[in-house]
Image (cartoon, rainbow, N blue to C red; front, side, top):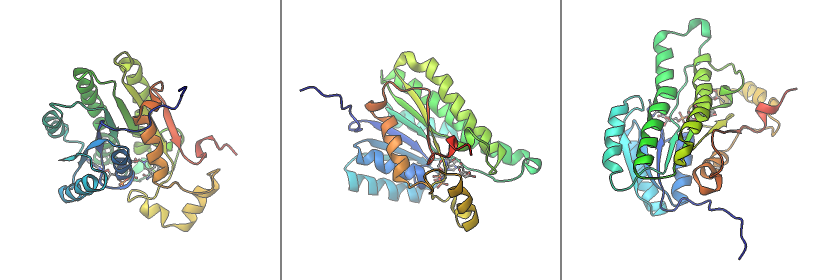
Length: 259
Ligand SMILES: NC(=O)C1=CN([C@@H]2O[C@H](COP(=O)(O)OP(=O)(O)OC[C@H]3O[C@@H](n4cnc5c(N)ncnc54)[C@H](O)[C@@H]3O)[C@@H](O)[C@H]2O)C=CC1
Ligand SMILES: C[C@H](O)[C@@H]1OC(=O)[C@H](O)[C@@H]1O
């Protein structure tokens, strides 16, 4: 039978997702499990992790493990990943955990700067490095996906340091893709516009702010979480095997909207 339909499912894959108990990371974890992947969730709240992994195992009949740690505690995470991936290497890493302290550039403190940089950028690089070492050791042609932002490509009013980290993830994605392509590892990113999560909750409670977003968005609405899970499943699946170094803007058209 002649077929060109690639494999979009993640059966038998092992995915590591950071910040996976809330918002976009949670949506991705659920979509991956529904697509058949076993998952390792990384987050800071043990209770949330326990509840989420139990739900994933019961709902989708997959294996769900967790690591209770801040992504800034890299050795904590890598030691636990060593244990959890002895027999099965990592197929997919999603660098999702991220935070923002929205303040004017003129007022940013060194502490705020470092917290955003460490959470959004440093963790993504070193977890990508760990995942690549793991994939190479297990001879896995894996997928590394980072959640950037439209703020990494166009200027927003929501914090310069946050934007710096999101731009860095786009450039990290390009640079790692040329270094690790020879191992068959695909490195891509996703740049969301606004999606309803705890990160954006306060902003999206302001009707005028939401109207401003809608006015700048060709599709005239904010995103729905399943609309970010789809591209994340695509980038984790064999369907994207010939894509690397790219950032998919999942933004309702916002980044291409000149005037
Ligand atoms: N929601 C949106 O409109 C957009 C979100 N993004 C990005 O999407 C990613 C996910 O954000 P959302 O789901 O919206 O936010 P969220 O706040 O709902 O979820 C972020 C998750 O990351 C976790 N996290 C934060 N710092 C952490 C740390 N140090 N260690 C471990 N986990 C940590 C949080 O606990 C939370 O579970 C972030 O990287 C964010 O920058 C990008 C563009 C738009
Ligand atoms: C779309 C942006 O990333 C948006 O800006 C913010 O301050 C929020 O943190 C969202 O991520």
